[in-house]
Image 1 (cartoon, rainbow, N blue to C red):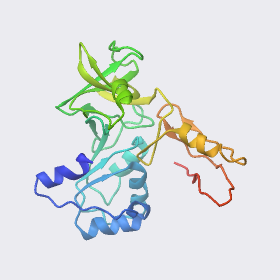
Image 2 (cartoon, rainbow, N blue to C red):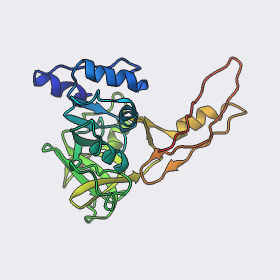
Image 3 (cartoon, rainbow, N blue to C red):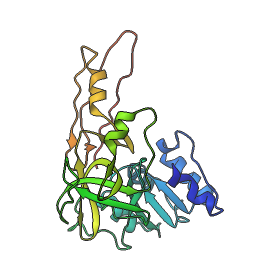
Length: 264
């Protein structure tokens, strides 16, 4: 939330907040951007992709687009770079609510898909942030190019509210790096930039929201007709498009899950 709200306010800018369901309507988003002369936009990649389909000149006033909450595909980054109605700086933020973030600025000409065929890098830490790639289960630094758990140092949250065990597991004091936050993400440094390559657990990101598949499965399996099916992107920890969904019947009716198949 701090990245969405405070940069505009502390610089004397105007903060435009879309309606609660605004992200569901690309036409509404485009009209809002044009109406209020928005020049800096923070948005998830999935919504940005839809927005580009309907923009039709409404985005010409934008100077900066920052993507958050999901991996930014190289395909989408290059679509923005080549869009005739845009002349923007595209930045990809990676981080967690518990810590600060890293930033990757997409080159004006787009991303080299030979180096990054699927996803844009997570970039480099902000000045007040440290990032460490450590071996799983220890705090031994991994050599450049080799994957390990991504840990943040520097400015961190104090704790989880009333969850001391989780706080102790995720916020760890170390002798070499000080207090760090263990993200559970797998990453590596390559070509001078941080790349996120997967997860240590099964946690997923769907439209920028953290999802625990086990929790969904537990609810679905309460219904006799439930057949939960999913496909995971093992590399990035994201739900892949699927052409199948669980259908549950109950009395009274209860909506348990909704899956909308889509193609990238």
